[in-house]
Length: 228
Figure 1 (cartoon, one colour):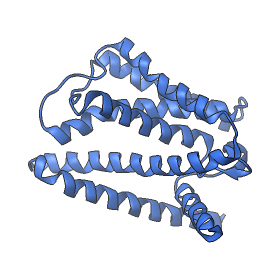
Figure 2 (figure 1 turned 120 degrees about the horizontal axis):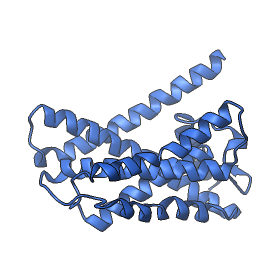
Figure 3 (figure 1 turned 180 degrees about the horizontal axis):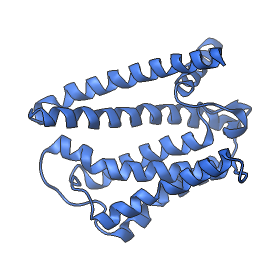
Figure 4 (figure 1 turned 90 degrees about the vertical axis):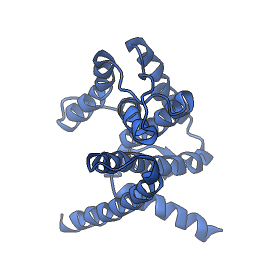
């Protein structure tokens, strides 16, 4: 049992190592165990996965049209707080906290998921559905995602590591899968192929690409650390 636990921790740690600096002081800990990625990345990937899945459940693949430009502008603003927090803290202009990193990261992930969702669904369905979100004030409901993530992660129960570490790891893979699927679908659409027959094949290709990306990124991070 101990070997299985150690193996799972190693896999999750290597997954996080591929995309994150994993600095202990900038990461969340549960029972002395550090999550696979920093607080900002934890919020980013959880925010993306939770928001995307929530939209998929609510709209049931019917929301495949981009919202009005005003709504898209508001969603784009979701990315601004995390950029400001990262830039100002790394520049040494101000001190930040893991809670702020988590909140702004989750807000950015939510905004990215809401912007990507119509594009993904349009590639899946190939038909014209409704705009989502339809109005700018509908965007306010999306704030429940980062708010809920922060509240859920606040209790530092030792056993919670085995809840959040796997969820964060799966969220990383899910985010890469969705983004790769979107990119590959767009390239295939540009080539003039039909949508329906290739969904599964593109999904498999996107999953393979995500694993390759993680493996290559992990080794590049390792090489950089060795050189420095």
